[in-house]
Length: 366
Image (cartoon, rainbow, N blue to C red):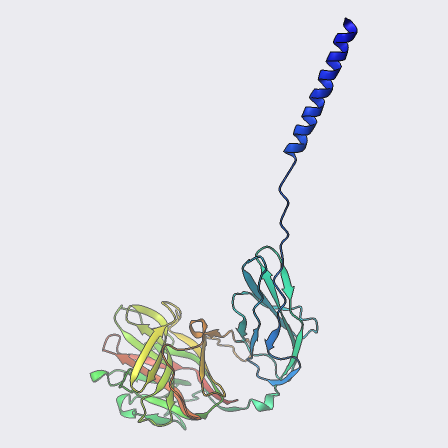
């Protein structure tokens, strides 16, 4: 009897261990982890491999890298002088192109590649391409005007001088006193063409204006306060060679009604203007540096930065106007030559008097 009970107890104990073991195995069962697939391979388009005589502000583009899992893909671009292209130049681009805004070196061989990344850690690198920038003698500076001394502007072509008569050089700066805006005589908008002091440029070109904007009459380096209603500006305009043709593009700094300390962009085509701005308080000093590049296709790209008062020793950090470098609306179809120069203007009488100011302007043939 005791032996039988013992056997039964052993059988129950073994069965309990078996059931517990099976249950433990079931609890440890997990779903298989899906393997992430990286973005597909892709090719570089521009700049082509071993290209030469490349501009020092080049544009890069490449094919789209697709992700087999449908993950979001972004791109890192590597650019430098080492052959392996290990220098990360810009990260997490969402488009397949990039426009360099800080000048590369002349006569330098660069290497570049792009890495496509998904949001699961997958990466795919392109091959490495090389290119060589053009020599410096192909980018001669034609004119640098630092407005030395005091007196009239030197060697400028002026349109509509009578609407803004008090323009010249004062203590080494461009100085345009706007103290009378009767009938909006200084305005640049639609059919209105205020004063322009310019030089004739041939595409391709580059024009850079340093520390340009608006100031109070007693100190051009102190910005006028904002009262919420004034339209007061100074900046750079590109105008068709024929002044009777009301076709122009300009980028100016100042107050735009309720939008204070901003940078305004405007295209005027056959006397019809389209305008926008870069945002409130973009230019808190009331002054910025402006850069305009006219390319081989007679098209314009606009840049700005906070004033770089030590540009001879400190690299520029140009920003594309409204991220694209393009002004609103349709750009005029320019011929091979255009006038490029300085404007100061107002709409209405709020904020008057004030001055337009600029430390220096350089006109470069590309």
